[in-house]
Image (cartoon, each protein chain N blue to C red):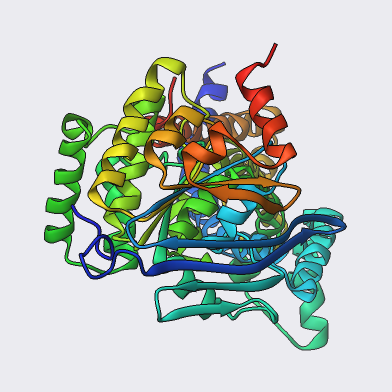
Length: 221
Length: 263
């Protein structure tokens, strides 16, 4: 029993530091890039130009119709065979961003469509262009609608970053795998890894609630 | 605030808005067959007619919210759009700048406070100095009795208050022409009076207005001219007392009968 606790305590810091220096920055950077990509894709899908809408639709279909692990392998193991060699970190960020872009694009598109038509009309009435209306009137309202589903996407991403361990990124789960292999205590170490993921996600959920409360200040309760 | 292009002694009587042969279809559905209108500076035109008659579509064409398929719209002597060919976005923008609209469902920006709603157009779009516009906006809010609501969000206001903010938002744009799309149809009956009273005041001040309304009593009191719209065209127009009391056209007679004796 004592030895078990000792292993638990001694492996806590390597696992937690994997979260702090690997999992969390990987998730945040990929999410930010993915969101920018998603906004562009959402606007393309809503565009009047058929080629833009079609391109976005194809992208989203491909990303959502193929496994994330396969996408990650394509970037890290596939691209070198055509002469493009990318380090583990940029590979992981690229794959996760591309993936988040596909999923979040649909969330953002739905959120934009959920803003009543009268808001566009009022924006045009006061003289705004489509671009200005989108930026000042439509997107701020769409943002409120999209926080809960985007939080889901983010929490999924945090957990999905464990896949980066297979392309040699040093993050939470890779550290756990090494400790487990070295000590032979698979159950204990992987439970500990699961616990750390859970704590990170609890913190994120609390953050989501705070953002929602802030964005809800102009809505009747 | 007084109208910027309104009842100057020299301007009264000159047409500010002239619409000729305006046509609009949505797919196979022809909503406007041929609409002709003239509104002189400082005058108020009320558009009445059954639902689906095209009166709201005609109003929306004036603000470029719908693009007509044919006909012309002229405002003053500097803005003229011919819809024989599709107008450029720039041309539509010049038309839109002439007027400001008050919507049936207010369409205030829910994420902005009352004052921010009013400032958005003048400051962000027209790029007028914030201090000047703020002073003007606060004056207008004071006038409609909503000074103390300047920092409230729209959801905290009653329908009547929201619509008064809608009117202030339109006035702050300093339009030459005010357009009202059934401004009291969404209001509880006891709140209608305030809004109609305000519109009446604006009429007396000399604002040029086009009002789509079902309030016949109001149209009679406020409008200088009433046009009865049916089937996408203006069936009858003229002096309110004449059109509303002794309509010449059979369809107008039917419509008024049904409004006055619904049961």
